[in-house]
Image 1: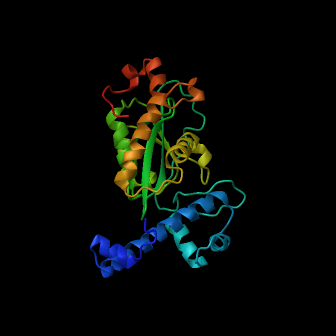
Image 2: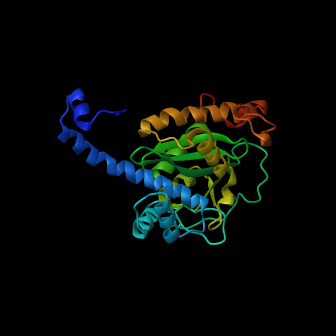
Image 3: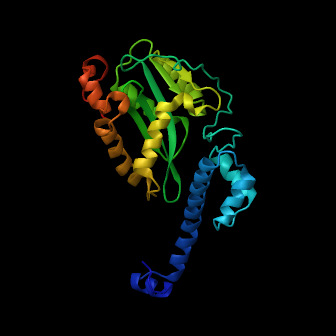
Length: 284
């Protein structure tokens, strides 16, 4: 937008002082640079899951970034990016906590109806100056998104908000299993207590194995590829304006080969499931 105009000319045209412009730039530019760098580091970690901070720092330097290893280590620690040897994935879940874990009860389940197994996961969404985090709960039988929450933090309240959304709209039968990774958001006392209130049995993936939560991971991959895909939302409100319609469209129109090429909503409707396991008037 600047074109051939100088900073002074633009400030005169907008009737603002150069001091105000530079003060604003000094406040905003570092945050934007940090967010862009963190996003680039996330992508490098996914593409190079066996690389540690030394190699990642060298990759960033080759890309023209002026960064040292200590800063890479700090950013990896803040974003829970761990280097795994001999594996083809990156752990983005903080499972080093004092809360207990639960066995994988979902591993050998044969699903015949909705509300037998719910799966949950969290992913990050890049904003211009920070990151937002999306938590979802899906019904593993129909692949329907039954709960979600999008917030600028990754505390346990985020995961609980998505679960409360699902509990509000779904009927909870006896024996329902809730499966997730070993993240602290799902292991903490408040989250487990909420599950116990509804007599829902917790189930968790094995240590360092995201394939145990493949259905939730598959949805997150679809979200990133079809909706996010390099976009930089200016704010969390803008992110909600794009992501929430995508969730609604996913439930209503996304065709799944496992569902005989029907959408989650159509699949449930064909099986007359609204009467058996879905509250009419539910959101998405």
